[in-house]
Image (cartoon, rainbow, N blue to C red; front, side, top):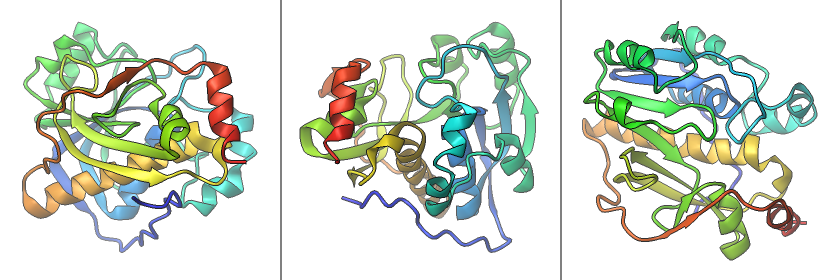
Length: 258
């Protein structure tokens, strides 16, 4: 189990390994910003990125934090090697990734499917808005959608699972999977458990994002090294499905670290 000081000390060498067969489909969220910065720091970049336009509404895990949330813990972000004030497109463009934007925020629209399907890449890293699922239309395009679930599979399926695992065993998890029509039931490529962070108030925008980014980088690094995707759990069966955690239980999970 890895410690939850998720700063891995990546060093920018000025050289990047471009993954020609990989496309990033992402909304400009705190999670996506961490993903992009982690990939750039590791020197592993997708060939192309399609960005989902902003949408209005209440912020959910994975969505951009309010401005005051990003400003208050700025030193904490930087201590872990991330700067959440940097827009997603800026990090990608700085790394030389070809960036374009979808013309709709609805990734499951026929319009979005046509734009995504027109790209030659066969693997799509998905990092959309919280609560938005990749539908059957996109899954039927013949591409593999790579998603990093915020929980250790198959034990913790569903939503906000890291709060449940913190309560049950004092750990967090992240698992890279290829999406299927059944939620969180696709084959697991790589999974990791992380010890609980000392300061738990930053779970949604920092620790959950950083844990997922760590697993994403390790998954892509294995693919770049071996020429094939890792396979930790081809049959992702069993486990328990959790639903959005009640605010009281969430508060208890946070207080457990005090």
